[in-house]
Each structure stands twice: as structure tokens, then as C-alpha cells.
Length: 248
Image (cartoon, rainbow, N blue to C red; front, side, top):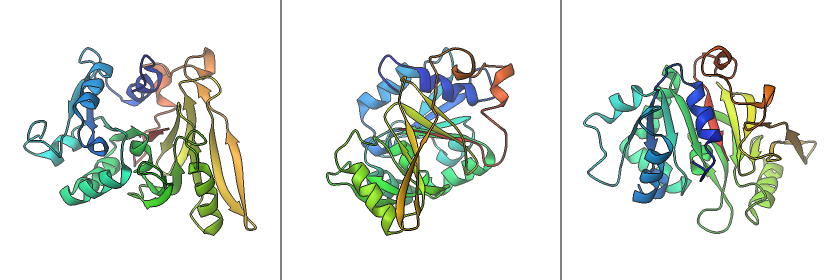
């Protein structure tokens, strides 16, 4: 939900196999901030999808059967904020188990910032100050950090933890999205020219960073947004579990 830049949001919608996909927003990482919910409904207008949200901090915005509602979605979009708070409240309400069930049934899972971090086995967060490790849902058996090199200390801490044994993974700069099919990275896309992502690993005790080619979604030809019909099949391979598009 970048301001005045819908490219990543459009990309997510293009992965769904319906003209007006059902998209549910989980703003848990922000404490269900009102302004964030409003931004979601502005970005995902009813004219092009069927938007909804689930609030865990308020009485409104809570379906009678949260599990049934989430499993009925085409896309579940997780907002940014504190990944530690998000994981805690999800565990308390059983949302973590429902999301795994949704993923295994073919629902597209995506998100920005904390909404990217949460899907991975572990990673680095700096929302509460100094960069620190966290343990995620583990749907993707990799590590992850976002806002790479944009926030002081995050990249250094990620490299240090990798050297100490954190599992290999991916770092994403702002404006990039990691598109996974199952646990396999399928594609890297970006909403800004030059935005980068990196494959991070450890070899012979040394941390290795490999730049991943990002397809700019505002370009033409092969780099453009997948078509809504004919071209949509390639980036959204229908395998179980369904793709997770994790944005930086």
C-alpha cells in the first residue's frame, strides 16, 4: 500500500484467479490502527475486489466465524508494524494456525514489512529499537529482513546472525517483493526502478550476499505486470501451498 504507487498491490491482485478477488486485510501489527484500515480500503477499492478486514483489538471488524472468513479469501494481506506484537496476538487468537490452513488450501498470503517477516522461519526486526532476531510462522523455511540498508543496524545485525548460524534467507529493500511458490522463490518484483533484493547465506564461515534480479513492474514487456488472463498463469503457479508474495 505505497502512497500513489499501486504497482505491488496490482501485482498481488493479478495472482488471484478471479476478476474481483476476495481480499482480507489483517492490520494486527499496527494494533488495528484506524488510518491503516482506511488506507487499505482506498487501495483495494470495491470496484476491483471484494475487500474486508479482521480486527483483533476491536469489537467491530470481527466476523462471526474468523476461520471460515479467512479460508474463504483469495488473498490475505498483512499490514506492517510490530512483527513481535503481531505474532503474539495471532497465537493468542489461533490466527497462526488458521493462516497455515489457508496457505495449505491455496489462499495467497502477502504483506508488507511485518507482513513479510511473519511468513518466514526467523529473521531480523528493528521496530522496537535495536535490531533483534525473531521467530516467525515458518511457512517459508528461510530467514528474512526488510527495509534492508534503509534502517541503520538492521543489515549488520542480519549478517552477524547469519554468521552465527541463522538459516539462509532473503533481504529486501523498500519497494521490492519476494514472490514464492510454495517454499521456492519464484520471482522478485519491484515498484521502483533499481530497488533490490538479496539472497543471504553462509559459506565456509563467511556471509555471502547475492543480488537478485528484480523485475520493475512499471516497465514494458517481460518486466511489466502479468496480464489478468493469459499471462497470469506463470507467476501464480497453482501448486500447494499457494504463492506467498512478501513485500519489503
